[in-house]
Length: 411
Image (cartoon, rainbow, N blue to C red; front, side):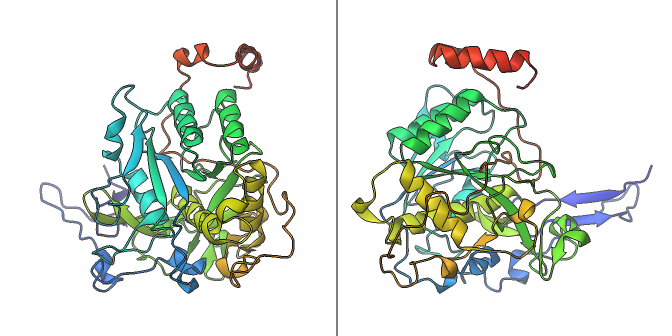
């Protein structure tokens, strides 16, 4: 029997590797050699590096005073390893998975939340490492994976509302919709919580809650020559989806609900245990946009400070600014929306002066705007399940409507 391929995904500090039709010796030890990240990033992590995604969005050209201080960010994911040298400032969170001890949020068994957190908020305190978008923001790690249920997600969104968070990263998803989750996301938006959600990794239509008009949806894009040719990252390239040096990876979900696209292939970020890894997924693209959103909330004249009330209008203004800064690389709005957000293209940010007038609240937004990709960039998301205990806590009219939709085969 012939082995067609071998895929090796290291825990940290090396590039993954994909071997097609490997020449294996039966009855012998076969060794696969991996390339260290330092082969491409000399001296890393002692010598710092700015990821290709941050450079594409022009984070490296911002004034160093843009740190996100004063903004509250939620990361609904698998937790966050706050012992990582670049994430020690993440001191707030809640574990919604065990029904009791909420303090175990820093135990990230799968690393997904830690990777997202690094993109958003990695701080260079004592180690150069990577550059996060908002290293001085107040970050709350809300753990719903592994084993996440719809009730856990609703509890996490309740935490976001109660803690008065400003923006929430949701690199997660489901193939099944939930009216209860949809209502809670709407409630969060009305409370001034901006939900930024991944489009999904199924290579098909945008996943739930991508059909909702209340979130901002993020697809993934990649850049050629940012990864070894024998890595799995290279397998995400489809020739028909390449435009110049940029490409739409084959895994990303697509459709009219896509608002923006962001870097999501070979993204180097933090993982549990103090290391770093390069991962793919709309899960990795979404934190780029969440990080930019945090900086706009902290520093843009239209949004910063007490002048802006915490309400739905502020969320609409934020989404409009992100959309208005988009740069199109692919020429396909179903795969990139209005393009990749770019700090240099954001009206009013570079001059740090108030704009003459606010942009229309709905300018540039996609028809629906949300999405989600599961808790692992290269594996299928665990299915959400409705917790029967939740049925006692929601409006009976919602329950009745949900049952009608289920009877009709719509959920």
